[in-house]
Length: 466
Image 1: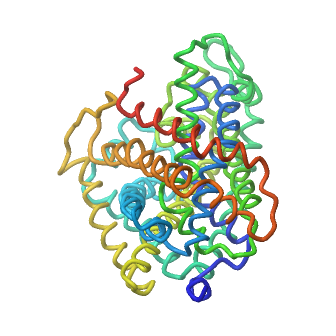
Image 2 (image 1 turned 90 degrees about the vertical axis):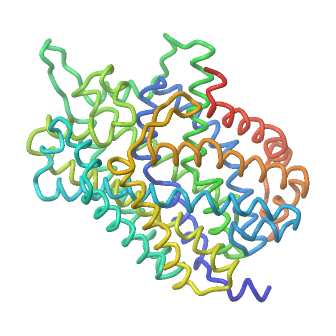
């Protein structure tokens, strides 16, 4: 109880929800969600995603936040506080954010570069052939931009939980929503006539996103869409990164965990949905359905700048707002990733915030430098188990997101579902007399469904269903 009083905390439920939602709302919502929705049948992907969010997502989020609040510990030490024999699970739970932050800052640096380019009026240059590849293969520019992004993240985390993370989230999250709504309104209002005389409108693009396309659905494609939706949700809601355990440890005792989780999920899914409404119609208008589906991972840095150019003069303004939006979203997530590591250092080694932040800053700087040089000095091509070919950033992202994170979550499900029992989570989430709806459903999800889905997700990393 004494530890709980000494530990930093959010000022209330709203501060916690905004910070946790800020963590969940990142590059995964603005960049990854729209291109997956476009590729996987639009409305069908959305439907599966929402069902998973209400079941699978709710279970994992509630469990991790409850672990954090119950133990008042960071991810590195929380598992050991629950059960000494399971303290080993804290190490991979801490390694995940430690590995993610360096390459996340590198990608954040790419966003900084594009934002600066657009705000200085040179946005059209980003559409020249090879612009993106020439930038990331440059020796110095990506390193400078990654450093700027890391420095911004560090300053916020250094300010602490209440004055840093919470205050930043309270400002950035509403601003992020405002920017999305502005761009969304413009995206739905535009139209374009291509060289064949075909007129495409933003509202037609919205229909492509919202209305399920069952014309080419097969059992294998349905399973792929299910796995894509689950992988996106798993990445988007920030589970298995140690973040929600760390944030849960700062959660006030009188806050309602179940209501907070529902609000986080509504915020996260809502932003992802709005991002899809913002991006997919615009890409559809200027590039057609084929171009939209073929954009893939290059959507944000290659396809969208082309769309902004085709918009004419207003495209520069829209592009500037878009990359400001992406930068804000990326920062809210990077702050939470760094905090997960910083809190672990503070708890494990009994050091102050300043020393923990500086230590993580140096580690991230060194590893981020290696990631940047992976496109030139340290360049190599490695074939991954799923058949893809990549270099340092791709290998790190693949290992963490496709292998380490599912392993951590499977371990969490086994510990809380079978060793300590789901009632531990239910008791923590309802200790102030709150109503915990559908306890039986939660128990079944935690013990059986979630670990099974996570195991299947893990197997897809090795292309065992290809």
